[in-house]
Image 1: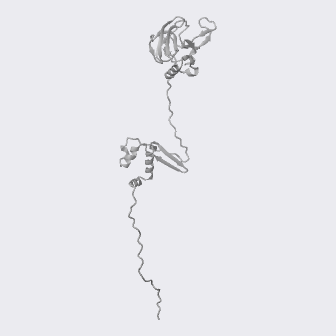
Image 2: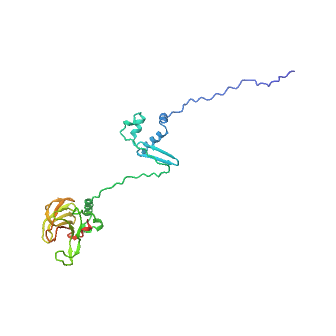
Image 3: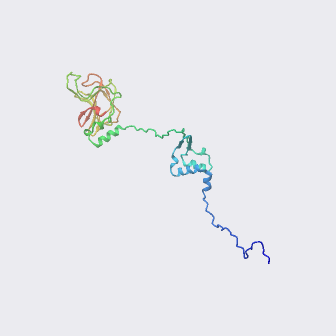
Length: 272
């Protein structure tokens, strides 16, 4: 009996080879993926900045140790749109934006320009007088609401008790403020109002103008050489109402300026 030296092979049908399962469903493609790839990662960031409202920012400067990165972001969306459509930036009306850079370790600060507003003294005065009587307005609130009656203000005799320049006696009460003025100097309305008197004052004021500013506030201008307004006339702050002189109880050319509140004279300095 002879035996075969080889291994016995298994008899029967061979197993069928494995076949990989076919994927019939194809992965959906992003229609904008190719456009984003062409624009690059930085363009994608700027697109997001423009969509989120950050595109109006000027520039971003980053400073790291030994590395400076400068990034300029367009200020308007049309510049981005023009690039996407292949149009040159020269066709866009927007001005080119300067680059913002910083040295390593530099301190970067962003500041706004100072914004100033011009005061409106007539508006302030009108607001004060419409809210309350002139007699109840505090000195702190009234300060600066009246304009200067002369272009150059130099006081020679203040409001209050003084030695009379006419009689030389003490205890004379000075009802206003005497200001240096050569005869013929322009006298200006201290605020907007109505002229209620322009004539001769029988109690020493000489030629006199009174302007009513409303709600109990009046200003008077005395010892005038001539008038530039008439009774009933409307005037604005700074209008020329008269010219200085030395009429009435006066020892020389000057302007006697008074402020009246509800018929009572007060220190003009509290309103100038």
